Image (cartoon, rainbow, N blue to C red; front, side, top):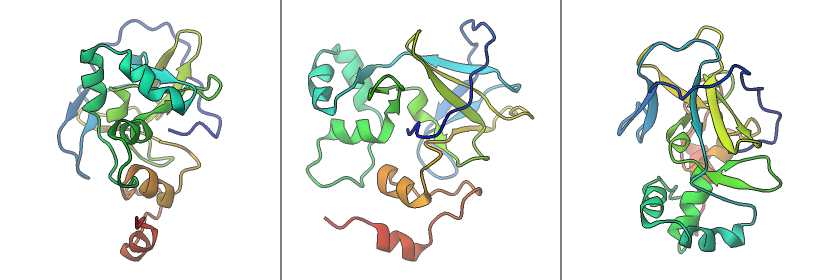
Amino acid sequence: MDPAVALPTPPTTPVKTPSPTTTTTPTTSTGGMGAYATRALAHNDVILEETPLLAVAERSHLFAAFARLSRKRQTKALKLHASDHFKPGTPWLEAIWDTNSFATGVSRETGLFPIAARFNHACEPRDNIHWAYDTARRRLRLWVGVEEGIAEGEELKICYGRTKTPELLYRWYGFRCACGACEGLSDQEVDRFSVKW
């Protein structure tokens, strides 16, 4: 997830452990997993604070850092989706990392947050959840970013990067954006942008 443009400021209200407000489901309207509100949510409600399962500043350290994880944490990481748009022979862990990691804003560090990774993308202004990394507490924080709040059962969507075009979303994450805020990609564009290895 790309922090290239300044992200919204998280709410400053003290955070208790949020009550369960999201659930993942194996199917969404566009396929794959997603996160949905299990109750009505108000503007600025914090819905998740998550510490990274794994964080590295240098890509070359990814495999060593992964090897230091417990077997349970390794399994959790390996259960995440990996885009199939990577070059054949790309190690599965790298594909998972590139598909799911978030920039933390700490130097060049990126982290893997397994719960946050389940949130699907929508371009601005269709994203209803904002996120930022709290460097002092080393937590990714997600909160309701829309003034009108979110209804029970509504899918919770984050923006993967304000500079990500439909082409970049397709090339990097392997999906065609259908959020309604952008023009998306035509079949001809998908054919043209598809990587041929």
